Image (cartoon, rainbow, N blue to C red; front, side, top):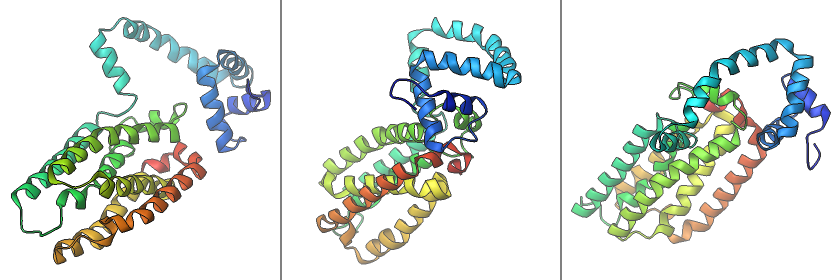
Length: 272
């Protein structure tokens, strides 16, 4: 692909379904098509020439959608804001995010009433793994009724999963910050593990599915960190300042794997 426009080889290959293109070429041309009207016209001509049945189907679908799109353009401001919000999260994420925030508030209340856990803060103990629950809900084949449409849309892979992950963090992190401030837990103790856990979930999700990865990592955290910490009433090394370099390394590795495996998020297996 050239700097300005997609080559005819890629346009023709994409018109045939993209089966003879590399995953990164498919992702790149889809991203380019969103902003380039010239290449969209070239793709339309290629589809009409090489796949007339597809072109006819697109025309039929467009004729059905056009009246609804015209109505959307004149919708009230509140509904337009809701439509923009839907680009960042699905309706199924809302109860999951509410549950995550509720768990954060419950941990905060238990910390404030002093449950006898000694020096262990429940906010600190649960903060690293809580966003993972929202990430799992945001990219779950079983929870998203529109997952097939989502997976087949342009830039539905890494771009969308990162956008939804950012939406989860935008809701959960402020709640955790408030909880940390009230209980005296510094953000440095949990924010880096939180981001490391999230990136590891996405990295492992490229192999086994984001939902399965989140469930597996949450189970490991509960077994290796939560249970021993509550049993001994001592903050584990993993949540002390000495463990932050390890979390930084995990975060960097997770980001590296996500970038290297970015094409995996374009297939339905990542929704498991």
